[in-house]
Image (cartoon, rainbow, N blue to C red; front, side):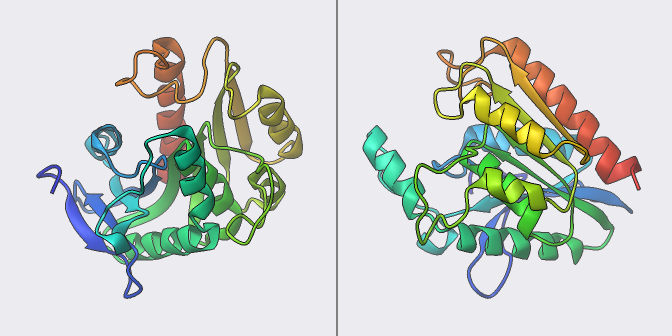
Length: 241
């Protein structure tokens, strides 16, 4: 186990799994956290811990739970893109639905939201239109448009967004080489009139929240995006109707 405050959990009999940090309490909201392609690491656990410290029960989905938590070979950009392409959206969304259902079965858990970084941000957006029981969803620079559709990637997230069934918050860097700022602005246009807020951050590229990577970390953008995320989760999971 990576950290003593987290417990390994299987969310269903089909093998969906991850780790959970739960502060307990009579009533509390919850968050399903989805990760970059590298899976559950110390950075992800720190973000989950911050949410737990704020009173949320947090279920971190492990894409590789069925493989014992072992991520694929990510030693080159080509291998990273191959791993992303091989990860089936339908499987991940099914696992997210299992995590939501598991959280709602826990005594005292009220509303559940989704929060994702990078690839996990893509799944947060897809989940907003596909996973029942979510009260809101948040993406940090999730990919919005697939280069080509396939059996594992049948619908581009930006096309699924118009069917979002819950409020949505998005954070995108204006210098992101993987998610063009034009796509983020198109997403905002497509969600116009819906309870959605899309922010772009000048000078920030992809993964600008990853504070363990000084070459990409942008402290002002990261701090601002995290504060907005806390406000969004607090309203839709604690206060909003």
